[in-house]
Length: 488
Image (cartoon, rainbow, N blue to C red; front, side, top):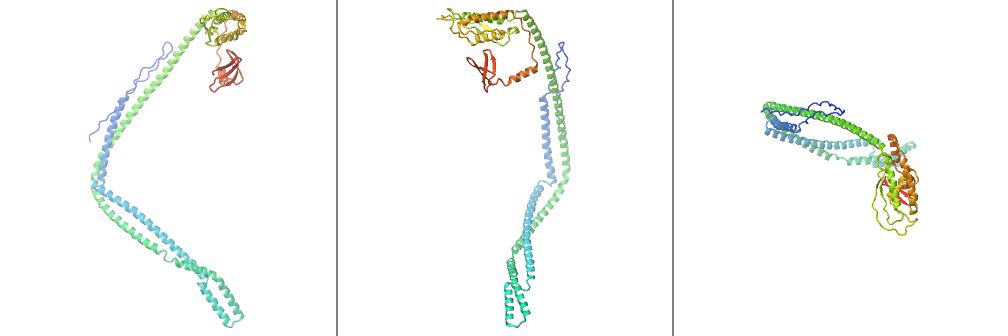
């Protein structure tokens, strides 16, 4: 047989991981790039080895079949022996079945004979206690004979008494004699019960002997074929040597395949370990960059706070007071009626914190004539205007009522001027420190479940009473002039 050429599995050697260095800013650098092991080259080499193993395995199986044929004396001898062995198996199985049937028949016959023997012994023991009587008729005849003798012969008183006692005993024996008579007739009726089984047992014995004779003939034929087979077994050893050689080549291929797989796994693990280290270093780089970014942001925030300190505080609130006063003055009876200014609340922080508390945009006035406006004429404000009045009153803690009629405008303007003067002289609020995490978690826990029914809530429209909380988390609250829906 020609020697098979080995195809080694080649995996790309992975470069060692270089230690990461840091820049002047303290940010680590990534290690040099590592090439990934070549999966395609590994798969090609693996497929070549598996193909060689498959070819050698087919050759080995063919060689094994040749060895089997040689050991069996050739294909003709092996097929003939196989046929005879199948016949032998069928005959042996058949004779086992017939023998089992024979044993069952013998067991039934022996059971019948044992029962009859037992009944005969019982009948014999009963007969031994009945003297010479075997039937009730025999006892009646004996009693009649004794009564005739008593009536026709002269007897003494003692003899007559003894005869009377004997007659009584014989009358008592009638029951036992009747039972014996019945048992004897039943036993006689059972005579010949095992004759049929005797015939069947004899037939089964002959059937077993016939099958045994066939087995003997098949065994003789097998012995002849075994002689032929043994004469051809001398050719087996060279085939066995060739078979062993092929098996060694297959084992070598498997060893080479396992070594290639192990090397591939090792290189692959080395590459992924390198990538994991790269991920760690990238995370460190991101963290360092984030810290640097936060540091720059903090510096910008401090600079912005310094700039804000130089500016006058509460400019947004003062501007809002001016806008509201202009709006209210425009609501007084005149030819033109102004539209309420649009006041948008961006957040609840004051302008002193560096973020706008209100964004006020003015709309163009629509010219129309007022007819018969008096001090009792109602003024319809939009929600943003109402919110502006409420927020100013709450933030400044100075009483400020939203004017409902034209007659309330002067009081509201006076209150707004007072609030404006308050903000004009009010110093900047000190910066609030952030609450500790524990305090925040407690407040979050407190408000997590939401307000309960009947509780009070503070809103931009005033204090409200909670009526219910819907499944979608929206709180329905009651105002003096209607309902308000607050999302969770």
